[in-house]
Every structure is written in C-alpha cells, then in structure tokens.
Length: 301
Length: 251
Image (cartoon, rainbow over all chains, first blue to last red; front, side):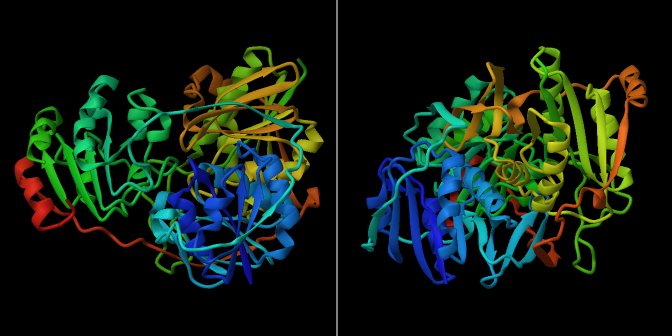
C-alpha cells in the first residue's frame, strides 16, 4: 500500500501539520507527497517520503484544479492524506466527491488501514469508524501525531502539469504578518476571551507571549466581538491546538472552545468567575481580575 | 435576477446541550434532548435571505434530509425568510456522501443557481457535504465564507484560511459554505413564525429520488474522551510561575 500526502509548504518550509500527516500516513506503507506551487525541495527532504509530485503551476491551493489532479492520480494509492488544515479541509472532501468515497476528517488515531478514531460533537465523543471505500481519503489532526523531522530524506521529484481552473479564480489573499510561532505548532499558547473587553486590551497578552515565545489565540466570542482576527480563533471550528502550555485569559471555556485546546499538556486559567467551565479542565487556576494578574505574571516570568 | 438559492439545513442536538455517550457505545443520547437548526445553517439561511432582499436572488428554497421531526428546522428557516421548503424524508442517518447525492438530485430538479450551506454540522463535525456536493455537480466551491458578493454571473467569496483571508471569484452556479463571521442571523419574529406556517412545505420520500444513500463508514464504537482532572487554584502569579517551573516543569 502507498499513501499520497498533500504537503503544505510555507516560506520554504513544510508546515508542521503536514509533517504530522506524513507521520500518520507512513503507518499505511510507503509515502508519496504532492506539493502545489513551489516547495518540492522541502518535501523531498522529509524522511520516509519516496517520491514528490511537484505541481509548480498550481498556486494558491484552488480546490477545483487541486481535486481534479488528485483524482487523476488516486488509483495508484490506498490512502490520500492531508493535515486537517484550511487547505486540507477545502480540497480533500472535494476529492472524495470526485472519487465517490466518504471522507474521514479530523482523524486523531489510526487503528489499522481501514479503522480510524475521530472526534464528534465538538470532541465530547470519540467515534471509531471503519471505512469500506477502496481509497481512503482522510485529514489528520496534527496535534495527535508526532511530526517527522524536516530533514534527512532525499525523494525523487516528478514535475506534474497543473490542470486549468476556469470556474474558480484566485483574487487575493491577506495574511496577517506575525513574528510569533504558528498557533498549531507553538510550544506555548496564550489565548484571550471577552474578559479582555476590547481589541486594545488584547495587546496585554503580547508581553507575556514575548517572554514565553508563545502564539496568541482567541475565543470565538473575542473574534466575533472584533478583538482579534479570525485566524486566531481556537476551538471546534477554529484551530485545534495541543501545546505544552496553554494559558486561557478571561475566557469562560465554552464547549466549542474546549474542543480546540483540551488536549494541551498543562492548562492555566485566569478568570474572575470561579465557576467558569475553563477551571474544570485547568491544571492551575487563578481566580482574579486579569487586568491585575497579567502585569504581575509578566513580572514573575 | 432570476437566481434561485438552495439552502440545505440540518436538525442537530442544540449547541448548548452537553451530549452524553450512550451506555452501549453505539452513539450519543438524543432521546429527549433539545434539537435545533445547525448554527452554521442559520448563517447560510440568513445570507440567502439577504441576497434575495438585495435583489441578487429571486427565491430561497430550504431543504433538509431527515425524519418527519426535521420539519421544525424548515419552519424556522421559513420564519427567517426562506420562501418554501422541501423535506426529503428518511429515518436513516445519512453520511455526507449520501446527503450530497440527495442534494444533487434536488439542486438539479430545482435548477438552483447557488447553494448556500453551513460549513459543518456540529453533530458529526464532518465539514464535507458542501465540498462533496460541489464536486458531484461539477460546480466551483467557496468554502468557509466570511463575505460574498454576487455580480455579473459570478460570486466573489472571502474565505477564512489558516493565515488570514483569501478571496476567490467563482462562476455561477456554485456552492458556498458559511463560516461564523459571514453574518449574524436574525431572530424570527412572532408574526413571521405565524406566516411561516402557511408557506409551502413539500415532502419527498427519499426512495423516489433513486440515488445511492448507502453508508461507507461503519461506526465500530462511540466512547467518552478521557476526562481531565480538575487542577488546583493558586493565589498569585508568582505562585503560578513557581508551580509551572518546579511542578509542571513546563517553563
């Protein structure tokens, strides 16, 4: 059996979530990688990757040509795998539609080549499902599979022509510029909620994030209120994170937020309300006014 | 503008309910649990109604695939402003692939110009039906939409992606899946709830569509996730830092 992994390359480096996807896919047998746009070299350096299909002509990850191309190559593979990223979740279900198979999203555990565990109901239950499809199309959660190293391999690179995209055209992209680590791969994440009261106060998290080299996240309520941009949302429908240390500041811990962070190794909660559900999952809690706690925390670090 | 917008909706366990796994591990308890329209689908209904109000669409048709009780969410959608509804009746639980086959048949029958739907249902959390449906129809897709504009036979969709926002322009017909920030759905007013009772609701037996609704996944078991132990409260930031260093050894 050979698996094909959609590998995402950003600024010349393979995203950590994609390295986790390669680690997961190697459970099935040999691994080929496919890279859209530039970045085939980075994918070829991944240990355990046999062959890289490089599609330099397919930039911006448009789902329509990407899924067409994957479908044309699918018959060579038993499994087609991607990270459960915005790109993976856009393209892979479309591929499944073209192949007429049922995709298996957000896999957190691989039991065998046909059997997978995935969270349902915002992670309040774990379903073990067995697929009867001849080609399995799955996305995997990076936080549940240790990523393979970025270097050490030397796969052959085959260049592939990109199919045309007439129905879908890329217009523009606005990426938030940040020197901080990515939310999904950061060792420490500090997240703010509505308790921060406004966008200006959200900046109070920055000095602590600087000291801990942390990524900054936000609750859905904070994003909906305009305190933070959407790409910072942690939760069921935002980013799923599992850092070594997660610090929740002024957020209550709604079910859908917990779904995105409760696998963190150590959780700290700072909240004025001692009954806030976030304390139920926190290893360490401080009941208090975040506007008083944050400056003292910064000093203590 | 003569465009018809089709909005598929799903009846799910209300988002405020903390679900419990059934004792026999076959699924989660849904008996006697409050059910509602999937929150992402409410956003999709709202967006479709706004398109009609702006004159970009002529008619909003909502459709659901489910048991008789799923009529509730169709009535809710019509109280929000949808013009009419279709219940594709089945007592089975269908996977996204099967639902997409049903929706393709309905979209073709209705000659839909746009399908606007939630990006994911909060029960199975699949985030797949819209993409599968787009593939099966051969239509382009604008997933995880935070803004849409219809003009000159195309739809421009701003999409929430991992690093920020991306904009794509799609030919119509197309499938758009709604993310949280697309809009804030209106509440149905009492007069509109009354009015919705008189709007047309057609029931279609699923077998009459002649589509493949078989499941490809077998649920082996459903289990509770490991519970986290509740930790300790500390009194100061200094004590917290001390514990993170010496006890948790995380900083």
